[in-house]
Image 1 (spheres, rainbow, N blue to C red):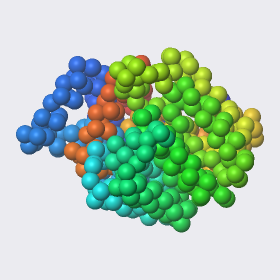
Image 2: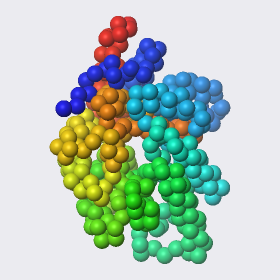
Image 3: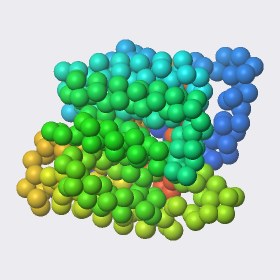
Image 4: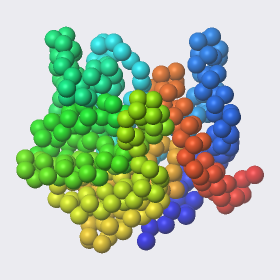
Length: 389
């Protein structure tokens, strides 16, 4: 049975200075009023050109991001890999609306795949479809009843070409690529794109992974239907399984627009379906490759147990564990120490451009029950072990 209690292993990559900085940061993130104030003041400070970039870069940015460019991530990549943890380079720039920006983002994702070629320290690449497409177009396509104009059809052809270019590069450099999940009102479009890419590229191994957010009550059925498609049309399924990142926004929109809430009724239902999905995919591993993107100890322990029960080798590339940089090190590094396949999402990009991502991380640590206290408790234990005041 895997244990996540060893803080010496969990934080072995951190210096005393890094450990103390992380401890101070999680103390601050644990204050909801401070996070709310930070979310309000940060855009104003950037607009007024106040000198806050250095403060952000040395605190929350250095905790949760690898650098401002791919090359700046080299230190994080090397440090993680010294402890058997891979890197998933995540270009976390959001909110672009121009075609030139979408092309530039596509090229940046291609650059992460080029960086990964022949580099076992970078086992995956990742992208968001909304990073290479206009959100409104994805939303219009989400409902099959909507008809696109001629201009929109040409626009979507460009989106499809970008997605295909990324997936073709993933095949070429032999590095699988994750397509991230997003809001339900654009997810049907993303699911269809992911399915078409899996059918095209996932013939001999899982090149393309879609992402299933299990806080949605329909995702377990989605996986079951996907298996039927794969059996019928002879392709492999790549899935990154996560609990999800847009719950409050989803509930609010469903209430405002008076449609059925797509979210599970409670956390217990999400946990139940997440674990059921793990069992289902391991049971059908001849068709699935799975990355469990989770900060949950019991789900991580369950997947390790399922692998043992099935006699699967810990080095089996069809099963990966993943967590975000700066969070849940006790899961990542203890799993890696036990020789499971583990990777960290390493976001990067200019400080100002990745602020939406950073504010979501601050929100997550404030709102997810026990997240901040768990991180603080683990950091405190390691500081005591090292006798750091």
